[in-house]
Length: 99
Image (tube, rainbow, N blue to C red; front, side):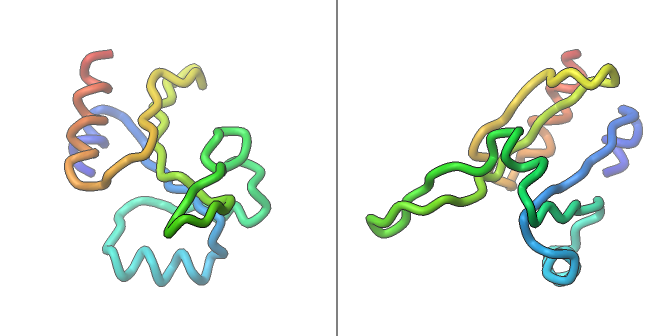
């Protein structure tokens, strides 16, 4: 997080869980950034993070873990689709530094 702060970058998470569920998740995983509750999908849907997924041969509408690098002008600079948390912060920092 200190590296992101040095790069003048804010980190936000967003999920369809309510605030209570997010608080438990944040504590369990020791997250150090804010989580936004989007129980009505007002942000998740327009960003394309809610889509058809499949598990054990069954299809369902679910949330895809994604990252958006948004510039100070509000323009999306880069999108990471289907993010794996391990090592992802370093990828994002490298993209910010690359400009």
